[in-house]
Amino acid sequence: MSTLTPLRVERGAYVSALDLFSVGIGPSSSHTVGPMRAGLRFRGMLAASGELAHVDRYEIVLHGSLAATGVGHGTPDAAIAGLRGLDPLTVDPGEVHGSWQLLDAGGEVRVDRVAVRRGDVQWEPRARDHGHPNAVTFRALGGGRVLEERTYLSVGGGFIRDKGEPARDSAPVGPLPHRFSSMSELLELCRAAGGDHPGEIARIARENELAQRTASGVDEGLDAVWRSMVECLERGLSTHGVLPGRLAVPRRAARAWAALVERGDAVAAPESLSVYAMAVNEENASGGRVVTAPTNGAAGVIPAVMYHALGGRSAARADVHRFLLTATTVGSIIKANASISGAEGGCQAEVGSACAMAAAGLTAVRGGTPLQIENAAEIAIEHHLGLTCDPVGGLVQIPCIERNAVAAATAVTAARLALLGDGRHVVGLDVAVETMRQTGRDMSHRYKETSEGGLAVNVVEC
Ligand code: SF4
Image 1 (cartoon, rainbow, N blue to C red):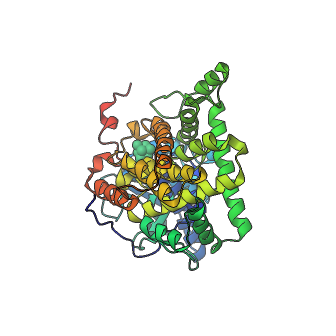
Image 2: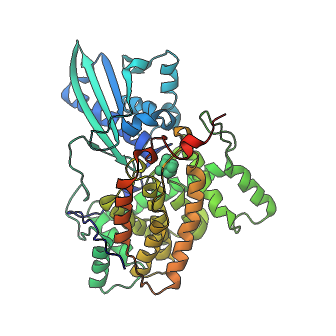
Image 3: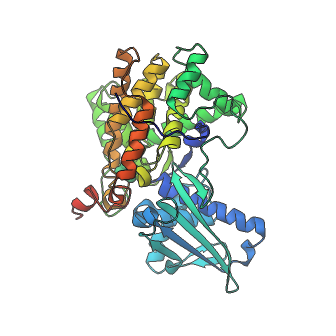
């Protein structure tokens, strides 16, 4: 039996499914989507104060992990795109990428009428005093003075907050009908409703969603998330070529998929699960449109498990919604009590979280009780504890792409094991999450999205 006492957040943990699963661009939610949203927020502030028209120079300072692996993750491109007013939700990915390459070659990029040059982007990989390893400062200058300066923290999954702003773990609007900050509290809510029903957790999540949106807003939002996942996955299955970056990693999913089709059992083949995950992550690595689930680096696990288990693009709407809503509760609990950010907790926080969410969603769709759902999520987390983040070359490619493929298989195994039992288990999800938090805290910064340790330093780049 564990003797750990889980850290309990003081406020409700629930994050809306439509925030946790947001449509953005690759290759990274924390290093691409977050900085782009930060640039957009900064621009919005300048516009609101009337200063936008007076800017004659911008400076962007990347701190900590955003500086350490920023080039490979497209961070300067994303920050500049945000300043230009581009939104990751709607932008054509082709409009974002390439800015840094241009600046590095001595060129300039226009933000309205202001020219941004190489020296305007500054790098401070050792800076770790901003309250989070992912921080970016935007400075607007005009007439020889600083008009505005803001530092933003990119806290994982594309979420950002102003430096100094307290972490907000509860939903942004309105009181929620169901408040819980841990899995034990969520299970208590299920029990209080007399619920052993497999849809009980999803029902609670849905009622929390309905406090923030209309029923059609929730349903259509979840449909849009699933549609984006399917489009991304299927694009990955048919796109050949080489991924961007100096590693020149060949795309493998389309080739593997073609081989399965040739063999005549593509959909039924057990390997298809892994190929689906790789297809999504190759799309992400190429900077394409992707759904954070709950991050971009881990974006392949949930779509792969859903596509494989629910019948591909013709999956039943009820199954898709139950899967996503159940997964949302698990992701929310992890985000509130530990982290979903590789820069904060290592890859256990990214791929481990995605695996737990997928295991929970699949167990719910397969008829598991709330206790079995918890069991599945816990199994998935437990076997990712200690997993480091060490992307080779600072690119979200090696080990990330295969790691998603393996985690998808682990999620299915975790769900199957949980469904074989009666829900009783020794280690609770809350204890596993707290263990993840402590392990992430104790992990050297070299293994937290800095590319200063692990595979990142042992793989010889040709
Ligand atoms: S190793 Fe894991 S946490 Fe790190 S970039 Fe890759 S997927 Fe993300």
